[in-house]
Each structure stands twice: as structure tokens, then as C-alpha cells.
Image 1 (tube, rainbow, N blue to C red):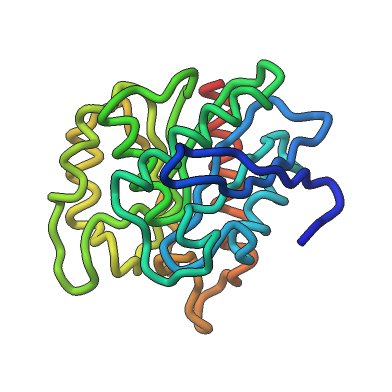
Image 2 (image 1 turned 180 degrees about the horizontal axis):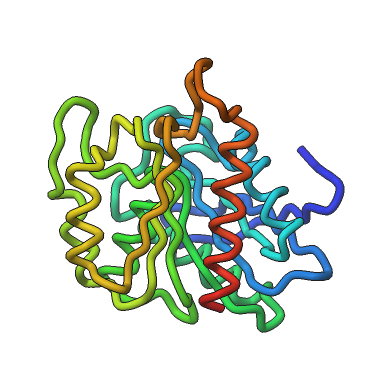
Length: 227
């Protein structure tokens, strides 16, 4: 699949995991580059990924999206955590080579953001200035807890959490104290009425498109401020 203004390329993770596809969207006015990982159930061409990358491009933030191996092979079950983390590192290394010196950021939607955070907690991601989480999955649905966020304390670069107030995977009663514990390093931006993917209730004053625009604008401002 191709799209005007988007460069499709392949990069190798390692001998075992093989090769995956990435999408570089880098307008001429780019001031930073965000390495953007997809969520568990949809790949890099998902509407959320497309719309987020397009919105960021308008605001001066280039993106490098990529598939995890299981998505590349069209397998429903995600790869092992080790393989996912290796993919994050390979994607960041590839993006750095393509960045032309732009400040580098990393993150992703749901699982993609969490895997990026785990990779950064295990070992700093080279040249990455900050992490952006579009719906951080703090716990399973109906099982509030903060254990999945314990590793965030090991990250020493700024982090932005973009969360819907109705997010079933991140109870704000759990997420707010966690962000407070992380101190100035973490910023939490809540979309009132939004769910895990920032979908709004029909009764809300804001549409899904407006909610996503709000999220993208916040992400871009934060990235450019920390670049």
C-alpha cells in the first residue's frame, strides 16, 4: 500500500525476527521525528495511526510508523515481549538514521507505547528525547492496578500520557497517582469523555475528530517544547 508523501521501507530487527515494514512521513517543515508504534489489534495503516501521523505532520512533527513482526505476518497473537522490545529498538535505530538530525521522540498507541516504555526502562533508547503514550494500557479491563507502570520509574526522560477519562485500560484513580510519583518527568493530558482510543459518547459536545485533533495538538506542542 502506498500513499502520497509517505515513504515505505523495510528494516531488519534481527536474524530470528526478520524484516518488517516502516512508514516515514517527513514534511519539509519538520522540527522533530516521532517513532510511532501501533496497538495490539491494528497495524501501522490503522485509521488512528494514519490520522495521528497526518495531524502531526501539519504541526511540524514527522513520524516513523512500523509494524511489529506478528502484524507484518498478519498473525493475530502478538509476538513475545522480547521480540516486541527488539522491534522497538530496531525501529528507533532506523528512524535515527532517517532523521537528518531532527530531535527524536518515541511512543505509540496502547501496547506500542507500553512496549516503547519497557524498552526505554531496560536500556535508554539512543538519542530519544522523550516518550509519548497515546492511551497507556495500565491494566486489564475491569482489573484496576498500577503494576504495569512500575517500570516507568526507571525512565529518565520526559513522558507524556494522553488518556481518555473513560479509558477502561487506565483508571485515572490509578494513573494520576502514578504520574504524580514520576514528578516533573511525567505530564498527563486527559480527554474528558474519551475512551481508550479517544472515541467520544454521542452525547458529548466534542466529536471523535475534534478529540483526536486535541490529542495530536497536545502531542505536537509537547514534543516541540522538549525537542
